[in-house]
Length: 252
Image (tube, rainbow, N blue to C red):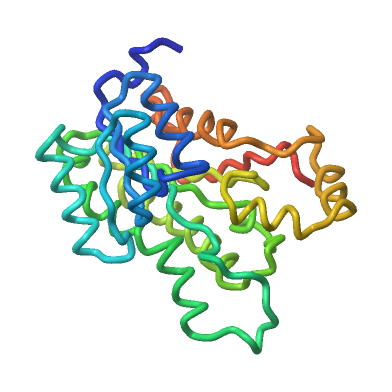
Protein backbone atom coordinates (compact mmCIF):
# COMPACT_ATOMS: atom_id res chain seq x y z
CA UNK A 1 0.00 0.00 0.00
CA UNK A 2 1.08 3.53 -0.76
CA UNK A 3 -0.39 6.92 -0.07
CA UNK A 4 -1.40 7.09 -3.75
CA UNK A 5 -3.71 4.06 -3.55
CA UNK A 6 -6.79 6.31 -3.49
CA UNK A 7 -5.11 9.64 -4.13
CA UNK A 8 -7.67 12.36 -4.90
CA UNK A 9 -10.51 9.85 -5.31
CA UNK A 10 -13.79 11.36 -4.09
CA UNK A 11 -15.21 9.13 -1.35
CA UNK A 12 -18.50 9.45 0.54
CA UNK A 13 -18.80 7.49 3.79
CA UNK A 14 -22.16 7.39 5.58
CA UNK A 15 -22.66 6.50 9.22
CA UNK A 16 -19.31 8.20 9.70
CA UNK A 17 -19.89 9.97 13.02
CA UNK A 18 -18.52 7.01 14.98
CA UNK A 19 -17.60 3.34 14.93
CA UNK A 20 -17.12 1.46 11.68
CA UNK A 21 -17.98 4.41 9.45
CA UNK A 22 -15.46 6.63 11.19
CA UNK A 23 -12.76 3.96 10.87
CA UNK A 24 -13.51 3.53 7.15
CA UNK A 25 -13.31 7.28 6.58
CA UNK A 26 -9.98 7.49 8.39
CA UNK A 27 -8.60 4.56 6.37
CA UNK A 28 -9.47 6.24 3.06
CA UNK A 29 -8.06 9.53 4.27
CA UNK A 30 -4.82 7.77 5.12
CA UNK A 31 -4.64 6.54 1.54
CA UNK A 32 -4.94 10.00 0.00
CA UNK A 33 -8.67 10.15 -0.77
CA UNK A 34 -10.89 13.24 -0.73
CA UNK A 35 -13.28 12.04 1.96
CA UNK A 36 -16.74 13.37 2.79
CA UNK A 37 -18.58 12.23 5.91
CA UNK A 38 -22.36 11.91 6.23
CA UNK A 39 -24.54 11.06 9.21
CA UNK A 40 -27.77 12.22 10.82
CA UNK A 41 -26.04 12.77 14.19
CA UNK A 42 -24.85 16.29 13.49
CA UNK A 43 -23.03 16.84 16.77
CA UNK A 44 -20.88 13.73 16.65
CA UNK A 45 -20.39 14.14 12.92
CA UNK A 46 -19.07 17.68 13.22
CA UNK A 47 -16.67 16.61 15.94
CA UNK A 48 -15.38 13.70 13.85
CA UNK A 49 -15.02 15.87 10.75
CA UNK A 50 -13.09 18.48 12.74
CA UNK A 51 -10.73 15.78 14.01
CA UNK A 52 -10.08 14.46 10.50
CA UNK A 53 -10.23 17.92 8.85
CA UNK A 54 -12.71 16.78 6.19
CA UNK A 55 -16.11 18.05 4.95
CA UNK A 56 -19.27 16.65 6.52
CA UNK A 57 -22.98 16.56 5.69
CA UNK A 58 -25.72 16.20 8.27
CA UNK A 59 -28.46 14.33 6.44
CA UNK A 60 -31.42 12.03 7.01
CA UNK A 61 -30.42 9.28 4.61
CA UNK A 62 -33.94 7.87 4.46
CA UNK A 63 -35.02 11.09 2.72
CA UNK A 64 -34.40 10.89 -1.04
CA UNK A 65 -34.27 14.65 -1.49
CA UNK A 66 -31.70 15.08 1.27
CA UNK A 67 -29.45 12.37 -0.18
CA UNK A 68 -29.55 14.00 -3.60
CA UNK A 69 -28.70 17.39 -2.10
CA UNK A 70 -25.79 15.81 -0.24
CA UNK A 71 -24.38 14.38 -3.46
CA UNK A 72 -24.90 17.68 -5.29
CA UNK A 73 -22.94 19.50 -2.56
CA UNK A 74 -20.06 17.05 -2.89
CA UNK A 75 -20.00 17.41 -6.69
CA UNK A 76 -19.90 21.20 -6.35
CA UNK A 77 -16.88 21.00 -4.06
CA UNK A 78 -14.77 18.08 -5.33
CA UNK A 79 -16.53 16.55 -8.33
CA UNK A 80 -18.54 13.33 -8.72
CA UNK A 81 -18.50 10.68 -6.01
CA UNK A 82 -16.27 7.85 -7.21
CA UNK A 83 -16.51 5.58 -4.17
CA UNK A 84 -19.65 5.27 -2.04
CA UNK A 85 -19.56 3.51 1.31
CA UNK A 86 -23.04 2.93 2.72
CA UNK A 87 -22.14 2.49 6.36
CA UNK A 88 -25.18 4.00 8.06
CA UNK A 89 -27.45 1.64 9.95
CA UNK A 90 -27.78 -0.03 13.32
CA UNK A 91 -30.62 -0.87 15.65
CA UNK A 92 -31.74 2.73 16.35
CA UNK A 93 -31.95 2.09 20.08
CA UNK A 94 -34.18 -0.95 19.77
CA UNK A 95 -33.77 -4.19 21.70
CA UNK A 96 -35.05 -7.67 21.01
CA UNK A 97 -38.79 -8.10 21.65
CA UNK A 98 -41.32 -10.88 20.98
CA UNK A 99 -42.97 -10.87 17.58
CA UNK A 100 -46.35 -9.70 18.90
CA UNK A 101 -44.79 -6.66 20.61
CA UNK A 102 -43.37 -5.10 17.43
CA UNK A 103 -45.04 -1.91 16.22
CA UNK A 104 -45.21 -0.57 12.69
CA UNK A 105 -42.84 2.22 13.70
CA UNK A 106 -40.34 -0.29 15.12
CA UNK A 107 -40.37 -2.20 11.86
CA UNK A 108 -40.19 0.69 9.40
CA UNK A 109 -37.60 2.73 11.29
CA UNK A 110 -34.98 0.00 10.95
CA UNK A 111 -35.57 -0.37 7.23
CA UNK A 112 -35.19 3.39 6.91
CA UNK A 113 -31.93 3.28 8.87
CA UNK A 114 -30.35 0.26 7.21
CA UNK A 115 -31.73 0.10 3.67
CA UNK A 116 -33.34 3.25 2.32
CA UNK A 117 -30.25 5.46 2.37
CA UNK A 118 -28.12 2.88 0.61
CA UNK A 119 -30.62 2.76 -2.23
CA UNK A 120 -31.17 6.51 -2.55
CA UNK A 121 -27.47 7.34 -2.45
CA UNK A 122 -26.55 4.66 -4.98
CA UNK A 123 -29.30 6.03 -7.22
CA UNK A 124 -27.84 9.53 -6.83
CA UNK A 125 -24.21 8.67 -7.59
CA UNK A 126 -24.77 6.06 -10.32
CA UNK A 127 -25.28 8.41 -13.32
CA UNK A 128 -21.86 10.05 -12.94
CA UNK A 129 -20.21 6.69 -12.30
CA UNK A 130 -21.81 5.32 -15.47
CA UNK A 131 -20.54 8.29 -17.44
CA UNK A 132 -17.03 7.72 -16.09
CA UNK A 133 -17.22 3.98 -16.74
CA UNK A 134 -16.03 3.14 -13.24
CA UNK A 135 -17.28 3.31 -9.67
CA UNK A 136 -17.30 1.47 -6.40
CA UNK A 137 -20.20 0.95 -4.00
CA UNK A 138 -19.63 -0.93 -0.76
CA UNK A 139 -22.52 -1.63 1.61
CA UNK A 140 -21.93 -2.39 5.27
CA UNK A 141 -24.27 -5.31 5.94
CA UNK A 142 -23.96 -7.55 8.98
CA UNK A 143 -23.58 -11.11 10.08
CA UNK A 144 -27.29 -10.65 10.78
CA UNK A 145 -27.80 -10.27 7.03
CA UNK A 146 -26.73 -13.86 6.51
CA UNK A 147 -28.24 -15.64 9.52
CA UNK A 148 -30.33 -14.84 12.62
CA UNK A 149 -29.10 -11.89 14.64
CA UNK A 150 -27.66 -12.03 18.13
CA UNK A 151 -29.72 -8.90 18.83
CA UNK A 152 -32.98 -10.81 18.37
CA UNK A 153 -34.40 -7.79 16.50
CA UNK A 154 -36.54 -9.06 13.63
CA UNK A 155 -36.52 -5.83 11.60
CA UNK A 156 -32.74 -5.45 11.87
CA UNK A 157 -32.16 -8.96 10.58
CA UNK A 158 -34.69 -8.51 7.78
CA UNK A 159 -33.25 -5.14 6.73
CA UNK A 160 -29.70 -6.45 6.61
CA UNK A 161 -30.83 -9.50 4.59
CA UNK A 162 -32.53 -7.03 2.25
CA UNK A 163 -29.30 -5.03 1.96
CA UNK A 164 -27.44 -8.18 0.91
CA UNK A 165 -30.12 -8.82 -1.72
CA UNK A 166 -29.97 -5.21 -2.89
CA UNK A 167 -26.20 -5.53 -3.26
CA UNK A 168 -26.63 -8.44 -5.66
CA UNK A 169 -29.40 -6.74 -7.62
CA UNK A 170 -27.53 -3.45 -8.01
CA UNK A 171 -24.41 -5.33 -9.06
CA UNK A 172 -26.38 -7.03 -11.84
CA UNK A 173 -27.61 -3.65 -13.06
CA UNK A 174 -24.46 -1.55 -12.63
CA UNK A 175 -21.50 -3.87 -13.22
CA UNK A 176 -21.84 -3.70 -17.04
CA UNK A 177 -21.06 0.02 -16.65
CA UNK A 178 -17.85 -0.60 -14.69
CA UNK A 179 -19.46 -0.06 -11.28
CA UNK A 180 -18.94 -2.82 -8.74
CA UNK A 181 -21.33 -3.25 -5.82
CA UNK A 182 -20.26 -5.40 -2.89
CA UNK A 183 -21.01 -5.76 0.80
CA UNK A 184 -19.03 -6.39 3.96
CA UNK A 185 -20.79 -8.34 6.71
CA UNK A 186 -19.11 -7.55 10.05
CA UNK A 187 -19.28 -9.89 12.98
CA UNK A 188 -19.72 -8.51 16.49
CA UNK A 189 -17.74 -5.27 16.72
CA UNK A 190 -17.57 -3.06 19.79
CA UNK A 191 -17.88 0.09 17.73
CA UNK A 192 -20.40 2.38 19.45
CA UNK A 193 -22.44 2.77 22.68
CA UNK A 194 -25.20 0.47 21.39
CA UNK A 195 -22.87 -2.47 20.71
CA UNK A 196 -21.15 -1.92 24.03
CA UNK A 197 -24.52 -2.14 25.80
CA UNK A 198 -25.37 -5.30 23.86
CA UNK A 199 -22.05 -6.82 24.84
CA UNK A 200 -22.52 -5.97 28.51
CA UNK A 201 -26.05 -7.43 28.41
CA UNK A 202 -24.64 -10.83 27.42
CA UNK A 203 -22.97 -11.16 30.83
CA UNK A 204 -19.65 -12.91 31.34
CA UNK A 205 -20.93 -16.34 30.32
CA UNK A 206 -22.64 -15.04 27.20
CA UNK A 207 -19.56 -13.08 26.24
CA UNK A 208 -17.40 -16.16 26.61
CA UNK A 209 -19.77 -18.15 24.38
CA UNK A 210 -19.42 -15.52 21.68
CA UNK A 211 -15.62 -15.57 21.93
CA UNK A 212 -15.53 -19.38 21.91
CA UNK A 213 -17.50 -19.41 18.65
CA UNK A 214 -14.97 -17.15 16.91
CA UNK A 215 -12.02 -18.96 15.32
CA UNK A 216 -9.61 -16.13 16.09
CA UNK A 217 -10.81 -16.04 19.73
CA UNK A 218 -11.21 -12.28 19.75
CA UNK A 219 -13.78 -9.66 18.85
CA UNK A 220 -13.15 -7.58 15.78
CA UNK A 221 -12.32 -3.89 15.65
CA UNK A 222 -13.69 -1.21 13.32
CA UNK A 223 -10.32 -1.19 11.56
CA UNK A 224 -10.81 -4.84 10.57
CA UNK A 225 -13.91 -3.83 8.64
CA UNK A 226 -12.18 -0.81 7.11
CA UNK A 227 -9.48 -3.05 5.61
CA UNK A 228 -12.13 -5.16 3.88
CA UNK A 229 -13.89 -2.06 2.54
CA UNK A 230 -10.66 -0.75 1.03
CA UNK A 231 -10.15 -4.13 -0.65
CA UNK A 232 -13.49 -3.87 -2.46
CA UNK A 233 -12.87 -0.21 -3.34
CA UNK A 234 -9.46 -0.84 -4.85
CA UNK A 235 -9.12 -0.47 -8.63
CA UNK A 236 -7.58 -3.95 -8.66
CA UNK A 237 -10.89 -5.46 -7.43
CA UNK A 238 -12.79 -4.62 -10.60
CA UNK A 239 -13.81 -8.21 -11.36
CA UNK A 240 -15.30 -8.79 -7.91
CA UNK A 241 -18.92 -7.71 -7.66
CA UNK A 242 -22.19 -8.82 -6.11
CA UNK A 243 -20.31 -10.42 -3.23
CA UNK A 244 -20.84 -10.25 0.52
CA UNK A 245 -17.66 -10.81 2.51
CA UNK A 246 -18.03 -12.02 6.09
CA UNK A 247 -15.46 -10.30 8.29
CA UNK A 248 -16.12 -12.02 11.60
CA UNK A 249 -12.99 -13.85 12.66
CA UNK A 250 -14.44 -17.12 11.38
CA UNK A 251 -17.53 -17.01 13.59
CA UNK A 252 -19.04 -20.49 13.50
